[in-house]
Image (tube, rainbow, N blue to C red):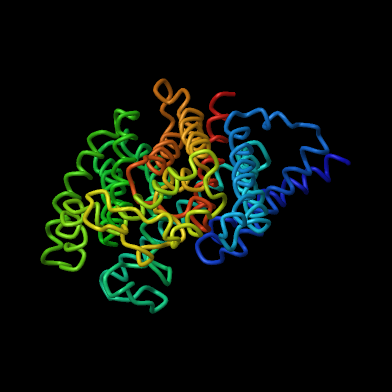
Length: 419
């Protein structure tokens, strides 16, 4: 195959990678297709050029082992009488390999060159602006630019039809805003104020949505960034103080948001054991204790949760059946409990090892050379992997797509700075 054919293959891969963020927002099925194109063109290029070194990456090896383990763990579900397991679950576990392959393509394929990384930043930054405009418009007028109202008349939805603006924005804000803020800070006043405005604006946009975990995730990520980039610290401190003052003001501006962020949070933490989250965690722990070696396989928590054999008292002992079938959901709202329930202790150890390896891979050299884009990608990835938070299903779309997009882009940036 000629260089011209390889260039065309790379161009297809780059275009598919760059439209993936747009599709992850509004067309999840098409996002699956674009991610598949990125992975397929990358594998085709590797087959032509013989460049398979990326398979020796520790995170890639662990990812392949984890997917294989989930497939093995899914084999015994029919023997337990759990419908939906068996062949279907095995195939779903094996198909999960598409996510790490997509990340590898972003990290080592055509999208990893300077042009691809620059355009990825532009697309992600434009996505952040797009979400923020809808959020602010909906906060002021009650509907977004498409005429959609708030979710449950409380949570802002941004450009979406459901309450998923905050999780997406919290993940994309740091790699988009931190490089821009770091660029303005060395400039003289008043242009330096743009850095403060960007950080405060990003935090304020997430705060007014009214979801707790995304706000904490973004705030934690900013703290990580401030530790690495010294000149960012005054702006991050100012943004933190301004956000802390903004939240009490919601008692007057938007009582429903204030109630979710303050009184409801206090009430939930005081009686966490009997909240839906606490009961789901207890159920996942029971599944893990009953199947410590192999778990229940891919989507095993969702299959096992309604089974009375896994009912156990709440952590505080107040509910004998731990909420029974009424609390059940398809996942336990925590990556680590999900890994335990689905893969047993080996699954939990594999995911925990992956979390460490991803963090080390993205953070290598940042203390010495805190490049702003790399810092943003490292901070948002570490924040997403903190064990003590409520999460979605790790493999779900679009959040799984966002996670692997950011990891793949982050590894590409790390490789570029190391070369």
